[in-house]
Amino acid sequence: MDILDAPYKTGYIGVKKAKSCIFCDIFASKKPKVDLGILYKDTELMILMNKYPYSPGHILIVPSCHLDNLEDLESRLWLKMSKALKQASALLKDVLNAEGINIGMNISKAGGAGIEEHIHCHILPRWQGDTNFITSIANTRVYRSDFDEIYKKLLRQSSKYFKLE
Image 1 (cartoon, rainbow, N blue to C red):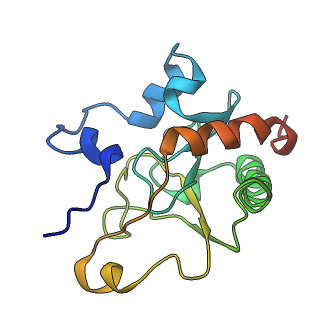
Image 2: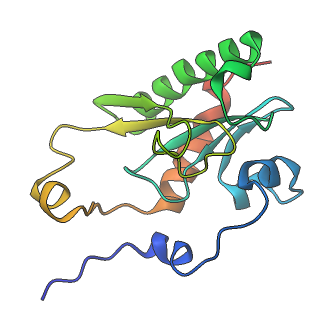
């Protein structure tokens, strides 16, 4: 029997969902940004690595306001998020040599949101052939990459890309 190794998922298994909002907790945290996977943060927005990525380099763009729907987001902040998406796309293409990008928002439980109480945007780097039969028939993703290494690589270059103030 083959064993698929995804050690970064270990912390996700058997953990009770927090009663508080994880994104609000990260905004309020005094921990160093490296401990939280943050690539950029100001008072209105943060850009961080997804702790449980769909693909290596999966980034989240999160507004500081605790909203569960897009309609209530200020237009100015939506434009700032859009600018961050463009900059994150460039970062992933340049630093990780992504051949393509997926961008999306899952809003509400019916929309597939894992964290439905706080809107956020996903940006995923993609490469030709990065999925195969196992994703289709076994609902499993396999890739060999180290989360911390990818984070460090992106963090080293992030200040060149994220100009949002």
